[in-house]
Length: 237
Picture 1 (tube, rainbow, N blue to C red):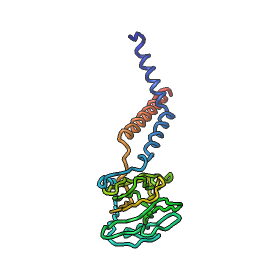
Picture 2 (spheres, one colour):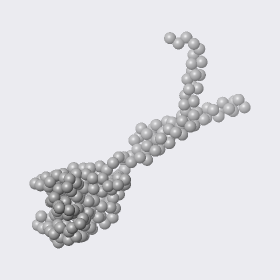
Picture 3 (spheres, one colour):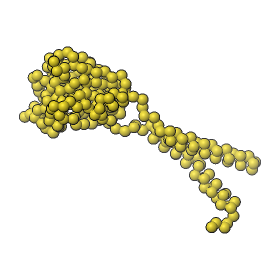
Picture 4 (cartoon, rainbow, N blue to C red):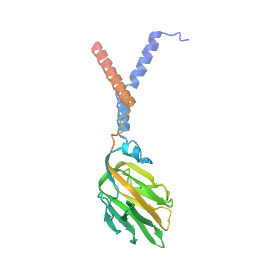
């Protein structure tokens, strides 16, 4: 049990708190909060549900591939996307829109030194892209600069029978996506339905209320500490 002078104990605790709440400490704490509040929410977000993806974006443009487009090295889809065959050869009967299936159809892969990918260039930078895919085999990648640091690669869902949705919301706007073989497969068939893109993500993630409360509390303590020191200085004067 403490048997010393209670006033001395209280005075000691008050000095410790005052020292902790000095200007450099508070300034550093507030600066840390500001830095944390400015950090991005995280890496690009991937979705397997179209409804969840649509809920995360605004201003969606969807291409149902209602009109046939002949195969070519470079074609412009109805949505304004420019689809290019990229590599050292142009594959016939690839990079096209076919009816009555109403789908984009292409073949990609690596065969005897022949390398082909499909690059989609959006009419303007977008924050999100999503589509229904039929892909076979399972080594097809989609790549793009989804977070502003360089290209990232994600593996598309693979099922030659079932259509699977794949969507992504970037950390920063991106101008294109590329579909390519990521394991050296000789030939990969890729069919795409209902391709969609969005220029904006939904409202940004708010800074947690606890962060603002912490900052407000520190600022209040700092001001209180300064007021106390000013009052003591006036009394001494």
